[in-house]
Structure formats: structure tokens, C-alpha cells
Image (tube, rainbow, N blue to C red; front, side, top):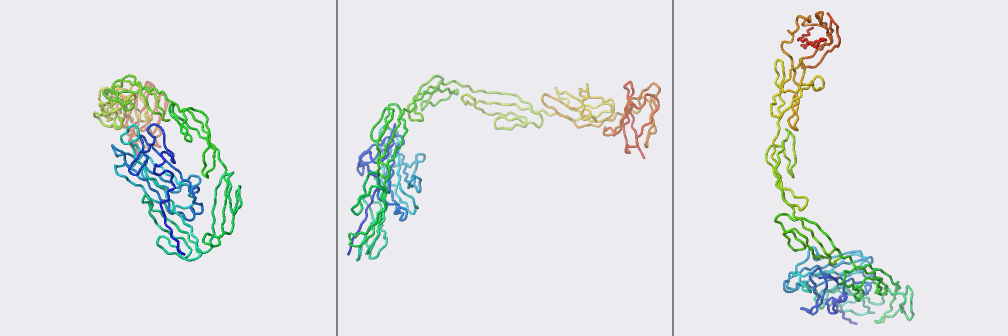
Length: 583
């Protein structure tokens, strides 16, 4: 026996060539997003409008006879194609195409995109074709979803956008053949043994179709699954079934071979669904072919994925229409863009715009006149300080400028700073009987400090020069404006003080060892004795040593070296003498 088989392009899409008008697809609707059908090169074709106009269709492969086991185990090649071009007069319209293989729960398993709404393909006057196929996509495929869109380059009212035609989704065709014996001719091959064979054929649109032949030589087994709706009847071997059943039987094929048949028959429930939708006043909502213009509750019967009638409840409301009041600013000599309208003068303006729900809304603009400024200031920096002007960090004297935007309208304003740096001279001149700050700048003030007493402020010592009453270590704090700096501590040893008051006070021996004697005149009362080193540090100090006369001072704890001995009387007089300690 010899049998011949051939294939063709099996398109599972409904109305892929627009021959049935605006049917079979889910078409976008709204202002500038409505499709139309026009005659073109290949007959009727879909034509987009002046906003993104989209259409999509989801194909249930199970409902088209492709079983779960076949899709999962065979993973037949799924091919796709669509033709597109631009519309006169400007053919440079926009286009995108997307196809997805989805699971029973609508999870994407595999996909392909040509362009997108954010990055579209630019069309030409010539027909272009997007085509390809999916293989080795894994298990779980049930749906094929195709989506495409077009947009008019001219932005003309009506339909002058992208033209779409000849949309095809083709699943590899399967031929199950059974011969008891002999040969089977398939795609030029003479076959005589059981097995699976592939053949490629060209369909009516030139699309390659892959045909799979499952050839059974001799008896064979058939296993399949059927999904029906509750209330339907399934007939098998002369019996009627109305509930989910597993059926099997032995039959003789048309070729006369004994065959075992096993069917899984499922009866599916109908489903109820609800939809919440909104329309703008004056617009309609397409509900199962019925245009609704009034908000309310509606219901309709639809077909589920298994072909079962399902009830859908629709709650339709009016989307809000907004009235917005906006206050903004206009820079001198500037132009304000109000929805594409240039405005050059302050005032109140009204315009119509589309809000987030796609409804026309009124916007009232109050446009205020803003100002630009030119500001100049003088700034004095202290040495080592810095200030910020916009993006600049300023540490040196000079002229600096920066442009800023006003807080109202963002108008450019210039700020210029004349920066000078205050450099305080912390040097100190040491005289025989005085200390003097080397900073003589106008505006400088002075405060002398006692380094021997943790930088204690010396009351009344606020002149540029200072005459210490006794030797020690001193510093000066100089202030000019906001700038303050302090000199290093300077050792001061008065010259010639050891000659003062010789007649009323004497110290011996000098050089000394571990003990010295202080002899005062009868009228002198001693209240304090202090011994400092040549750096001004106090190494020995006594208070109320002797009310009068002669007294001794133990200096055994003092290291060898030169010191300044200071003695104060009850009258406030001081005696100072350089004392050498030698052992």
C-alpha cells in the first residue's frame, strides 16, 4: 500500500488578514487609538491611528486540538509571521511586535520582541516582515499571545498610521497515520517502519510549516485528553458520558489494524468574573459588542478558555474630569510652554489637557513675573578659613562669581563676592621691660595671657604692648573683626630688676646650694616667694613666708641651673634676682 501526505501553513490566529473586519482581536479604543480596516496590497489590512494603537490575541492551543502531552513531549515548532509598512504620506510610522508562549497560569515561558512603544521600529513604504519560530521551549505551554501596535507619524486625525496584515501563528502539524503493512510516502520519502518523521512545506503566505508524521505500521495505541463543559455529552463506543471519565477500548482502524484507544474526558465548570472599568463622559465602553455610555452594573455571557459559557459582571463608572489651578513663574524675556502654547507675558490662562484617565481636563494657569538679580558682596576670610559659593570652595582672596536660580521661576541670578583674607601677625617683640605684638593692623585688638597659669587672661592687659611686673611666659591674643589668632608663649626676663630695692632686701649665697637666706629691712613684710626657670615655669612657690626680718628658703629640691627669684612685699612691691643653683 502507498499513501501520500503533504502539509500547509496552519494558522491558529483568528482573522489574521483582516478579512473579517475588526473581529478576532482585542483592539485598543479611545482618542486616536482606534483601528480601521482598509484595502491594500494583499486585500483588507488593519490601519492604526495617530496615537499608539494596539491589538492583541491569545490562542488556546489546547482548544485548537494540541494536547498537553503533545505540547510537552513533542514541543512542536511554533512559527510566527506578520507583515507591516508605513502609510502615505509620511511612511515613517512607528511599529512594534511581541509574541509570547504562556503557561496555563499565563506565566511567560518564551517570548520575542521587535521594537516597543518606547523604542519602536520605523516603517517605510515597502512591506517588511517579522518572522521566526520557537523550538525547545520546554514543557507547560498552553497559550500563544500576539500583540502589535502602530502610531501615525503625521499625527493626523483618522487612520493614517502603520498598516498591519497577514498575521500568522503556525504550530507544527501532526499527521498520525496507520498502515497494517506496505509503504507510506511522505515528503518524497518511502516509509515502511513505525516512527516519527519531519517534513517542511511552504504555505500560502510563504511561511515554512513543519509537519510531523507519526507513522504506525501495524496495530497502534491512541491516548488523548478532552475538555468539555458541564452539561455537554461525550460519546464513546456507543455510550454517552456527562461526567469526568477515563475511557478505553479496542477498535479496528481504517487500515484494518487492531488499535487500543484511551481517553481522559474532563468536564469543566463555568466561571463567574467581575470587571471594574471607567470611561470619560461622552465616551463608550465595548462590552461584548455593546457600546455602553452610561455608568452602571451590567452582565454578559462569555466563552471561557475551555469553550464554556461564563458570566461576567461589569461595574462601569465615569472617570474623573479634573479642574486644576497652577501658579508658576516667568523669567524676564523668557517663554513659558503651556501645553504647546508659548506664553511671554504674565497673566491668567486656561487650557484643555488629557488627565491620567484619558479624560479632558481644564487647567487654569496663573503666571507670575519673576525677577533676575545681580548681587555683589564683600567677604573677609580669616587665615585658613573657607566659604562655599555654589560649587566653589573659596580659600584665597579674589573675585568669585556664581549663577543661581531663583526659588520661584528658576531665573538665572548672578552673585559676585569680593574676597579678602585677614592675615594676623602672631609675632611678638621682646624688649628689656616690655612685650609688644607685631600685628599693627587697623581694627586689631589685643589681650595678653599668662602662659604660666594655663593661658589665664591678664586683666587690663589689652594694649598692643605689655609691661610684665615680673618674669615669666606670656602670649597675646589678637582679634580683628571675626578673626582671632594667638601668638606662641614668649619667655620674658626683666633686665636689671636684681638691682632694685637692694637697700631693703638681700639674698645670699648666690650661687646657692641647697639653702638661701633672705634678709629684709625691718619695715618690709614678705608675703610671697616664687622661683621660676628661664622658660617662665614655676618650680617653687611659698606664701606668707615671714612677716618681717630674716628667713631661710630650702631649695634642695631644685635642679642645678639659673632661675628668677621673685619676692613680693605686703605693699605689693616686687624684688627679682637671677639665682644660680650649683652643687
